[in-house]
Picture 1 (cartoon, rainbow, N blue to C red):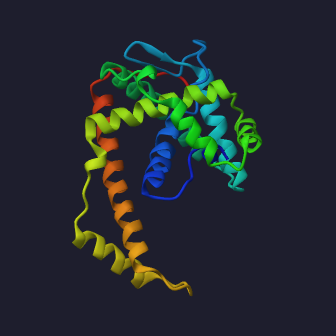
Picture 2: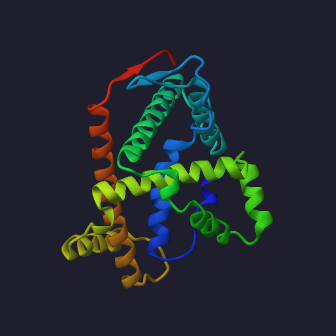
Length: 227
């Protein structure tokens, strides 16, 4: 699974990274393809290639297939629409990052790569994960660089690390969880509070990211082509 290539150490910082990476990574899967043949969209004069689109759709469909899910024609159409929109969003976010002065040289991809490798038992396991995800080391580093640039953009523009959640909201979430919990294991309420506080912060962050992307789209010229 591709997301296995991201840090999975314990602690809130790693949880935050995994969530951010999971969100952004879904925007980046198709960026390796750069041919200008048969574009599926044009964003501010820049073509979104069909090769990138095909790569994105293939991954999405394979993901559903691996879960034993059979999609209808209408659902496949939606998958394709989501794929185009993710590629458009990625293009806009990368352009915004560069405009904000964030470059490949300004993010520490080697440090992040080392953290990813540390989450695997050994180098062989990491390399196998790359192979399974159909990445070379260089192509993976390229995608990781894009992820870090966009993560940096979100933090710089939205200050996501400063998001706060009120104690009343946390307690309400704890009460609701315990009210609906049907498991047999005893729950450590302090751990639960910490997890739910993190979840509530991420929900706020997700909303802010979505609003930011929506504004980028509103300020852009986007033309959908045949896909």
